[in-house]
Image (tube, rainbow, N blue to C red):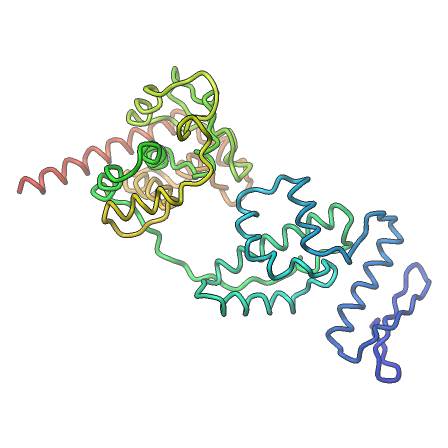
Length: 341
């Protein structure tokens, strides 16, 4: 035990290599004293290991600025930081602990109706940045390394029907139409599509090689093109640059165009990410095995992260895409027959 109470005030007593260091916490509050005690221990360990940059008093706002400048934070980080920075910007990183996290969770739920999943993603981002602080030597340990996240309820995933697909495509702007078709026929994530480069489109073999992915497993995976996707890309083919653009410029956001298309189409609301779920569901209904679907979508196998990708060969992937096209054709025929009746 490293906390001792003297004259109503807690003191931190830490031993390092046989030397005892004493420091008054200046408080009679046990929880606050425990936090100060942890910081005291971190400082001594950092001094012992010669961590020149050790700086637990750095604010989370300052740490975030360094993280974004040196790590080029992804869009996911930027999105989560919109909620994290107002809450933790002026807080010293050495004082961020589970009690503050509990307060943050309560505050987020008081602001507006949110799922536990949303708040969990916020805290995963916070924890990730604090791990980076440890790697850089600003902190000795991550106080949230063993943070237990709230249990998430499973939600029904929306799947786009063929009728809804037709209505959505008719209502979408041209640049969004291309992205919708590509997502439905390849299962690629929005971020992957927006960063797809022409140099990674192989027309001779009718293959897409994913240029950039949020997962290491998804990077450079090969996806056979459907006839529809091949025709779309062939008509707009170029030698270099981004595949999907708006008036020749990179697309950074599609939120406005997507909401407008959903509204004009009159269909139920879906997220763009639900197109990826639709691709997976359609493959499943076409009889494609789970591991093949994972390989096409860039999912981990749950064991060795490379296992799926080394065993699912290209011919199997081509067969899966053929099954997808056959499924789509049969479903379209059923709709036509139903209309005639």
